[in-house]
Length: 579
Ligand code: PBE
View (cartoon, rainbow, N blue to C red):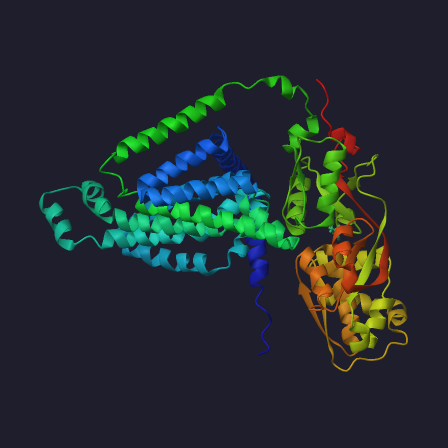
């Protein structure tokens, strides 16, 4: 059909832009409230040594679900602590609790409303279907724009993904209340309110709780996704493990998530009819829990010895001591961690997320002239779109200028000699790469931008393809990470290979898998190895199983980057100063 494409994406874009600007105040208020709530929960949960919370949880599970599960809770949580995932576990618990809290707060009333009005139900049901089936990743995108990166967009996305069962089951539970009972209560002249609170809700409770239980499990299943935009916790540990191909760490963190799931599931499933209710009543247990929370709160409220906090840093206070990072497996993240150590920036926190989320955060801060510190690299289009500067690095933690190398699998030369030769001869300048990047940022499709650059630079391309045998439709798989630099280079070289008779696929992966893929020959080549320092560790791990074709670009740079309007020049300016 020859109809023009309906600009649905563009409409959604402008809608989201409009919402971002119009409700900016509301969003930042919400972000602060949720962040604050989360911090309080994290602090209360970690007020004592881990063993205290472990015992409390074990006792609670024992109470609701018998001693066997209590014992299981005790052992599994001790194991989690032993493996070193306790802090992450608390973060994850807090995230799930907050998401669960909002689910109940909003889900139950909406469910009740649905049960009372057919019209509402007709409107809400398709929305719920949409919310549940739309891939959760999709919510993350506007969430970053609305709430910035960190834990809040993660919670929001989890909430949207998880709320449906609570609404549906509340609705169902109320509708399932036998008609005779409703008629009876009507006959006794009860008001709608009385009917709801005295008859419908009590009878619907088991169903509603089953919904809440499902919602909480769904929220937990979102923790890995949420970590893509910077939510901390076990999800971030799993994501980091994937990104670095760390099988052991992935298993440990994954196992910890399973334990949390079992514990939360059993508590929420049996909370209405605890196993040992005949021994201690629910009221007493709830009161004890409340007392514990209050005690935790009191301990927290006792002013801490402030002498340690005398050192402070102005920029730190303005940016919440956050450095906005990218994919956890990126070499730049490792360099930044080294820098944090080298410069003694103990108060600072490096936020993990993705390059795209980092740029979104930068755009937002830049628009409002707010201070922000990011992990940056060149070449990058952001330097032409914003006035930015690298912070000086007198200790040299970020290393100097580097090259980007092309790595190919071992037998490529034999299997596709032409492709091998083109990849070997591929070399361009920073300015070339930047031209492609700018077009992509301005909305051009990467493949199109690559094609355009190739058309504009026939001489350069001719040098790469010189003397190379044409392909015969052999397939070539190029792997890359979604860094702006590599999106540009991979698309260009991919197009050139295609024009020379190869059937090219581009696969976007995480950092570790990119190296591993070439090394185990499941991919043919990558043009994204930053050497000698950024990717040194990956390179050393895999270098025996791949072939290094040398640089395709020279003179890159890594470092901490801030907007020009910020009044600092050096990483040393982030150090704590005595007041
Ligand atoms: N980068 C861009 C990558 C390499 C390419 C600097 C973000 C990294 O840090 O691994």
